[in-house]
Length: 399
Image 1 (cartoon, rainbow, N blue to C red):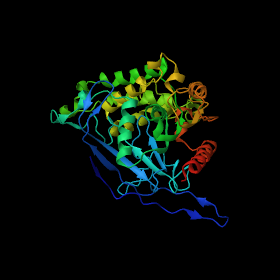
Image 2: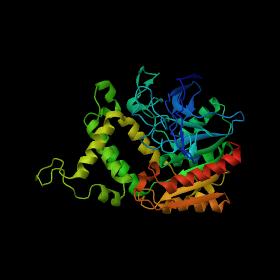
Image 3: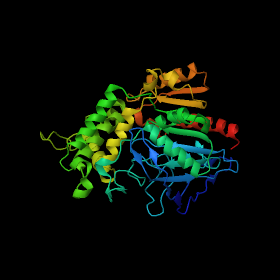
């Protein structure tokens, strides 16, 4: 296995006030790294990938004992770029930069944070856009369907490569939280804490339905070509735009949509046409267009399937407590009141199963108006809670 390194992390200083308080700062300029694995990985679908690459970033410093590492698992459309910015693109701020950095809830002055782009992704790790060594052409539609469990297995190999025998914590929101939960089952002795934020133990029928509508928008796009659109010089942009619009609706609460857009008209009048008339229509089209410029449709198909397939209780007759019985970590489980996609009731199912197994669990239900996206946004109560929990982790691992 080989690893190609960028220039690393350059932290920006904080500013000290007279009363001793500080303004938290960014981890600064960062660069992705690539770990190359030549050992085959067997996927749950039965396929085997003979060799693969994982793109990742790190922030902070691994201590001499190797006890202060934190793995951050990304959700659907995010990546390894968790915090900081790039030298050649200052606007490319990490997707959880408000959470991770010097003096932030996950303080990189104390913790060594790892972000990774998973197999099947489109941000540099081996995925559908990568060349299939067996054909010399992009994998395209032939790239295997992957699962949360496959991702966790490859993340564990990355941890081995980085010399991390046990994570102080594995954390994530939404699909990232599913990975954190899976870590506690697959590698119970390799993490001390799990932060499971805006999660569900499996998708409801409604959620699967939303994902299927999104997939059909892509698959039925004339430019999809069975997933081999790279070879045709095409991109299923129309389908990907619609898929993103459908998904984005589910990330926001009705209250947020009402307060931000209401029934505002873009031009102040009805035009009796099918152009964008309402501000919410304009917003959704903007989000869809922006997403289609950088995200790969084949990856979107696979990641929505990753969501659909996650169900640790399935192999235990639907008994979530039995599924979580191997877990040894302590847990922080957080939900948000207006998250109708992964509702607090689903987080409480996880808490109940963990308590059944006498695990150490802290649960918080944050009254926030933002819907599912709340785990990404600034909320003082939410951030104070995560900070307090990481203070506890620091005492536990000596960070």
